[in-house]
Image 1 (cartoon, rainbow, N blue to C red):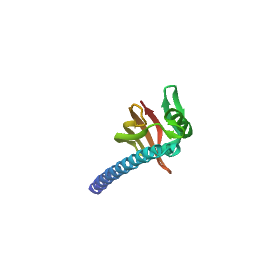
Image 2: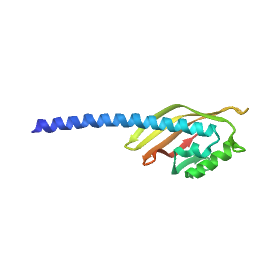
Image 3: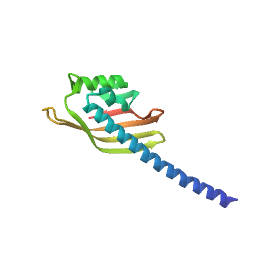
Image 4: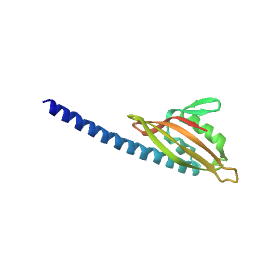
Length: 145
C-alpha cells in the first residue's frame, strides 16, 4: 500500500511539473504577443489599443509616484509621447524575459525603444508584473525607466 501511495505521489509530482512547464510556455507566449500587439497599436496611433494589456487598476510608476488605472496610464503616455493624435516616435520592445511568480502571476522585463520622427532615440528598461484573469494576462504594475 505504501508503494502505491509513493508511486501516486511521484506521478502527481511529474504531472504537476509538466503543467507548470506548459503554463510557463503559455504565459510567455501570451505576454510576448501582448507586447507585440501593444507596439503595433502604438505605431498605428491607437493609444487605447496600446494600453489594452493593462488591468483597469494597474499601477504605472511615474516621477511623481504611481498613476492608477488604464485610462490614467493612457492619458500620461499620450500627453508625453503623442502629437496631434499620433505617436511622435515608433515603439518597439526587445530583450523580453518572462518569469513566473506563481500560479497566475508573472514578471516581464525588457527594453523599449522609441525611434524615428526626426527625434533622438529614447530607450530604457522596464519591469512589469502580470496577472492572469478572465480577460487573459494583464499588467497590474509597470515600472519603466
